[in-house]
Length: 71
Image 1 (cartoon, rainbow, N blue to C red):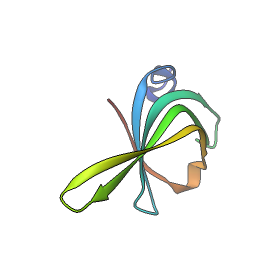
Image 2: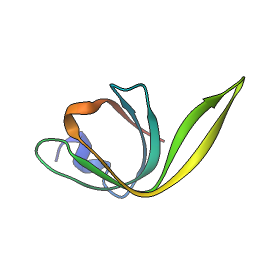
Image 3: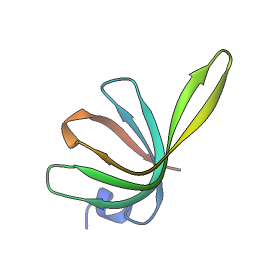
Image 4: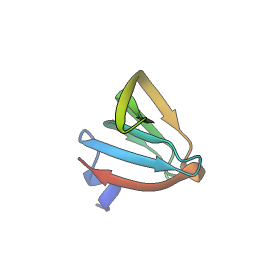
């Protein structure tokens, strides 16, 4: 079992090449590291603080992912 398979059904934070940050439950992934998040929220910088935008179920292409971390 690799690290990403260990993270399935756990809360993660994902950073993308487009400087976007997503948080949610890692529902599924494939060999290209395409990811489906449940209860996904996008973390957006607003002035001096962060706000969260609800995204629901969200698909992220593997080739746009820079970093995946466990929350």
